[in-house]
Image (cartoon, rainbow, N blue to C red; front, top):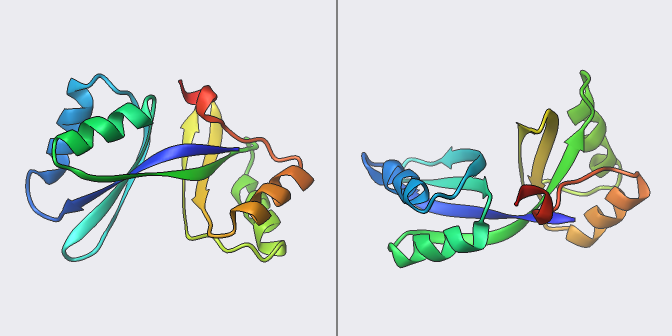
Length: 139
């Protein structure tokens, strides 16, 4: 019900982002989605990719600070308000969302989010019949 995501800690200085992107390119690992959240001194570069375990291993071997974690990836209806409908499910169940981003994948909207209430989120997904991506969908 979750998919793996890379979280890469990069300094806010010239050349750090391209190092990660070049490593992914050299490893021939397809990035499916990514987002960067930044502070004054560093950024967190989050990536959904085709081979997350191998990407994590290769980035670590290159000296990049990276962690692998699980996130939820819910398919959205292709209509205005799809994200609101999905987030309402979790809001009504008092499930907090730590962060969230969205992307298109195979003509579907995908809403990615992380929560500290994983079991409750799993229950809300099942109870509301939400469709989600799995790691197998991305390989």
